[in-house]
Amino acid sequence: MLTGSEGDDIVKQLLTVENPANPVEIVIHVNMLKEGWDVTNLYTIVPLRAANSRTLVEQSIGRGLRLPFGKRVGVPAVDRLTIVSHDRFQEIIDHANDPGSIIRAGIIIGRDIPDKEKKAVTISSSFENIIHSNVPDPEKKPVVLYTPEGSKTISPQAVFEKQEEFDVAKATFEVIRQYERLKGSHELQNPDIQKEIVEKVKKIITPAEPTLDFGDKVDVSLVVEKTTRLYQEMSIDIPKIVVVPKEENICGYAAFDLDVTHINLQPVSQDILIQHLHDRNRYILLGDGSPGEEKRLEDYIVRGLINFDDISYDDHSQILYKLASQLVLHLKSYLDTDEKTINVLQYHQQILCNLVHMQMQNHFIETATEYEAHVTKGFHTLRTSSYSLKDSYEPDFVVETQDSKFLCEPKRSSEITDETVIAKAKAAALWCKHASAHADETDKKPWQYLLIPHDQISEQKTLSGLVASYTYL
Image 1 (cartoon, rainbow, N blue to C red):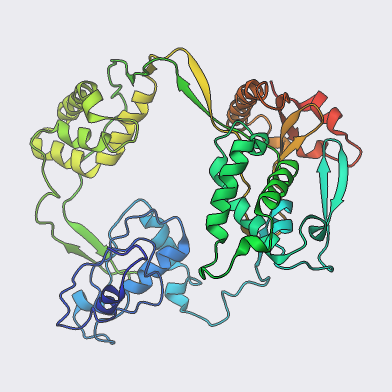
Image 2: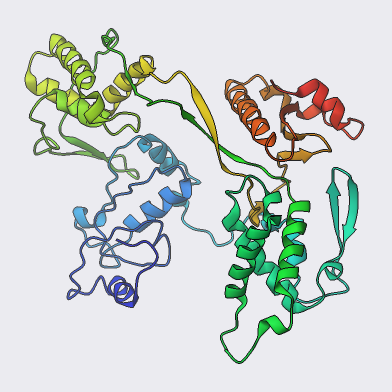
């Protein structure tokens, strides 16, 4: 199995997999071998991930179309690619029949090159921009720091003077990430925490050559103090809050009878119908039995249901077999043989399991009635983010004033009443409630959530006006 960390021996086996002396017959890969691995004697491809991308589908088809001997040999089983029907089968067929598809038109060099080049953009926090100045550079632009008290300009050279100080600052930032479980970044100034950070930073910056003494060139304690204080000034503490039940939480499904009124699925032929895309000729590939039989008819349904994340066989087996029995009994009421019943259970298994699971959701029960919030992290250190710039990037915002903090989420005005948007808003408002309770122990600044229609944002609007109109309670 390939995951990206293979050694030279594995790579060598992959490159020589077509050699008769190579014993490898099956290769399983995880997001690997998508391109650049040319194998012609490949006879079966089994994608185990959702084919949500047309490119992935075309890559799989292209790999299957490679001829084992480099040319057609006149043997249909060797020259033909057979695609087994699945949930997106018709979409593949329609695309293949499109005269402009890559399967019919072939590959034209330059055709798929986008008109506009994608631009990769990397965003770092202002704090990182300061401490990652490799050397004091007079031409480096200063950073404008906006605080609840107003704005001020910070030059990297005004904070640190030596290259060694910048190196200590970068090491300090790495260590700060280990202290996110404090109540807030203000606790980084605690004398005991400062001592711990200094010791950890010294271990990071200690040079490999024992004859060199990094400490002679820089006051590590002073740089650590400056860095942690600068971090506190240039960031907004956003706590991580986990809501858990106060007592043991027992989830399950209440007993109910399955609604089978509209179930009338019919058996299908065990033979496989094959149709050529180019000449539309058809022929039959005879089936040689079932894909695997269960001892009990109900097991076809139970086996499918336990694949859902919210169903546990140990906890829910009683209701699973009850519902499966009701379904099997209904199928037998209009199918006159066990063979036909098995056929329907095998071929339509996923449809039937989805139907049962959907009805189970209406009878989900949870015993916990009270919950409590636990703050697992008092703040998050910002990480550098990268994304492809298409038109523009519009982030959500966290705003801090002299007396409050706000989660500000602009949303298209036509989506404000959308059920998903409302559900997220309720969750965000609940988070703000718990974050405000945590703030009582730290900076005394309560949190509020603003859900703002996009067409209500303009240069003339003030934050206080948006708060008055769009705070979601």
